[in-house]
Length: 267
Image 1: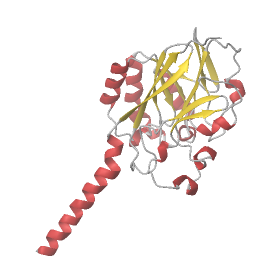
Image 2: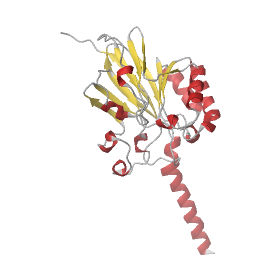
Image 3: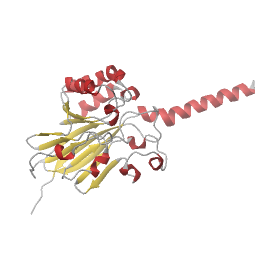
Image 4: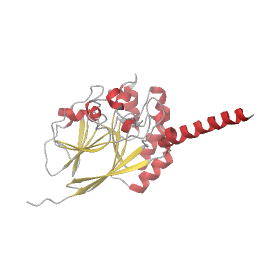
């Protein structure tokens, strides 16, 4: 009888440990706040790496956050799908939520999105919900230029085409993309660039990206947070969903609030 009790206790301990260290971080949303200096005032909500079949953050939480923050724009930085077109139906409620928020939304595709058979079907689904999908394109507004660079990991990026607008030093250039390694190809100035792809490691194991090849920046230890680049500053989101194994270890799911503030420059 004592042996059975010890076995049950061990099983319970294992399950509780698994839940606390590997499952809870996927359910416990962290709202990161990042400040930027520019020539105008904007608030941007970034949601990255849904991998929708593995996303454990509720749509109600996302809806409440959008309502509370009242952003000027929402940037979706790729990997809506994890494996296949079968996830389209699961993705629809999220896209509907974004549409119903009434917030002007821009999106780019990620490597998982590019890896499915029906990429066109995904593009149509995103566009049907009033979301502006940018594939190496830009949108010039009165005070900002929004640039969407297509996925670098699968080779669909074209920075020259993306930045082909006429230069205007008075406008902030806001860039969204998926894979941060595209920065190795960008030769144009920008105010801010936001991306994802690396999930903040997803499992925070030392030297993980030395073993698993996730690109040049990851190898250098640049896989989350805000960093400087010769042409501007950039931010790598830890993402809201998980790929492959539906776990996180010491890396919580993230949505990011970027606040761009006007800074007067005196000569």
